[in-house]
Length: 364
Length: 105
Length: 163
Image 1: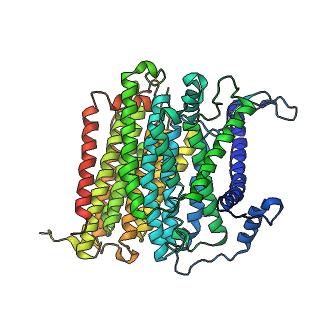
Image 2: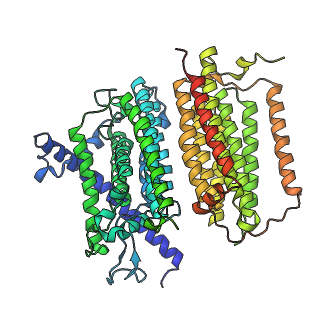
Image 3: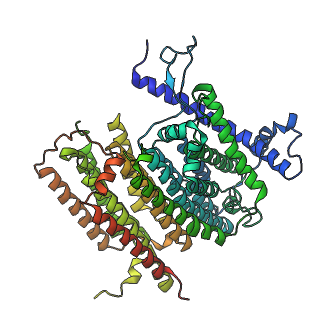
């Protein structure tokens, strides 16, 4: 009656895909509401508070509105590329979540309604475990540029094209600094897999939060945070959206559900980047104080708090900073972030090479 | 561990891709498309390297390291090639290979 | 299971390669080439080279093809500029390509090579790094970094407008 191990893995993978993708889409809806309310309070106003108690039904109202809007297809646009581009953006956004762990390892409780092979089984919400986990995420980020480029080009509109080219230039410029910021973390953990990196942080400094990579790799953490803000095109790097600048940037000609898809891709990218930052730099699901358990439900709580903190900082930046100019953006990405990341890799490598005692895992 | 049975089929695939690349270089008249077909040829070669490396005795990784270098050189070549294309376009305002036949003897 | 995946992605690769050489609009050729490169990446992974598979996406599909698309979109290349070459040139080109293909395939088939079973094939990144930085390849590795620098400077020098 119990299925073979291969089928068990398959069923578990399908379950995790449903959980993660469903959770992300739900989080997208919740995040729109959270963002609008938080921004409003920062700007000394109220935000959506009419639809439902505290405006909680606002995302549903937005969805219904977008559903009924007219889907305009410009006559001179490249029809198939125009239709495919938002789908490509969402596809690359969702592909990246395949190797991220979404919480600590836990055991399935021995409930009677679970199939027998799931009861009391150790598991972790992670769709796939591959050898080159972080490199895979870097590859998918590299592919994410295409959604923007094709969307900008397909609309056959000057502003869209310029917006699309500018945005993709921004995306792949900051992608380099993003990737380099991970190298120090990978060196310390000795592995590309994110679970290993999280556990490595939990082992340092006796389990205190001073052992997290945000402390031991502080410049890399800064570089990661700024590069990630640019990668998901959040303020202060939100030139791709460019409201009131390039009409609406690369998604000028998109309306209704296609626009909703592009927004969804953006928010999913933001959540992915926050989850990755938590796992790589903020100790993942480890409580920062030794003695507090980090497995199971409590681990989820610590992890969730950290992810929400990172998302809150993203929203906070949006409410506080103005947008940078394009040349300032390029200057910052190439002439500041990239050298800082590269020099920090050198420093980390030198530290690991000359003080192997302090880095037991890295100097294996 | 036996190498997978499709290693020899991967070699056939690499030859097909290489042949299609050669066809493209001959048939196409747009300079950028010719450059893209050259990239296709290089990919065929990469696949051949990886396939042979999989079947190589002793588990050596020399084939994959060579693929690494081929990719790096292909990137450099694509960058310089496209820069030349931009300069040519500025000069002649066309991207037809037949327009750049000044040296034909 | 691996074999099924291989044949599916091999078919996709060949189909998109045909689109690359047959499409008149070079931007569609570029899209098709991206599809080819990504399916090649899957095939590399199936052949036991995860590092090369990921590198293929990062370098080829994620950087080189973006460069191609940028140049195509900035130079505003139209599809009318690409009529097939007239007359016998096409035939000669096709014939040469087919002859090359046949000669190479004949060489592979006729050569009496017996692929030995690969003992414990481990292509992890750690082993790749050990080989790349070993004295055997270290010099080449450093030389390619200088090559990239030279290509960078050369590309900028070639493409910039005269001030």
